[in-house]
Image (tube, rainbow, N blue to C red; front, side, top):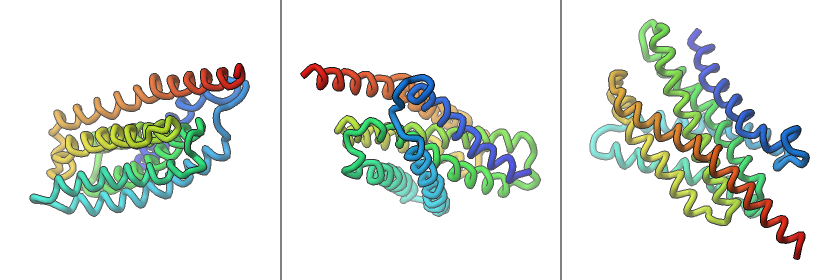
Amino acid sequence: MVQVVSAAAGFGPSIILLYFTLRNYTTPAVKLPFFDDTKIFKFFALGVVLGMVLYAFEEWGRTISGDILIAAVLLFAVMESLLKLIILNFPRFQRKVDTAFCGVALGLGIACTFTFASVYVSLLSVEDPGATEMVLFSLIGLQFVLLHGSTTTMIGIGVVRGEARDYFFQAFLVHLSYSLLMMPFFQLGAPWNFMGVGAASMIVVYAYVRVVNTSLPALIADAKRLSQKKRKS
């Protein structure tokens, strides 16, 4: 049962969000899709692999305590954000609109396995986990999905716009803020720490909604205007 719940928490929301985020930018919503499905699948698969790698690093980080804990949280936020930037900022992906959508796929792919592993290990740490624990850790897992989905897409949009540094910094701040707010929950094992959990939830929900409802549409609108100018000239 623990495996089923963990898999559902990791893969379910990630795949659903991938569909709903991309559906307005491909057929039949538009005549000419803004990305190639094969490329999206490859980035999603890459993210699935990276999710396990990132989880292994963060799981090790949760064993750290004391004065260096905040430094470790900062280091992991930098490392994960840089890894996403390095992948998406290859020269062949720069200034190409589909890179933003590849960022969506990469981030949600990471979220699949990262969330699966996090929920699975968390439930195993509880003696005889019941419905309450399963729902609680699944909701925490949804935070991971929104976190990685939003921050990776931000970086992808920055690469497309030629503003990778600025968007990287935004993604890093979202990641760091979330991690610091959730630190007591993971370090102290305190399910009652709903204040920090609630604030962290608001950050990742806002970040993802803003990316989907504002940043991506604005990017496409700008790309269309640029394309029209080139045709006229």
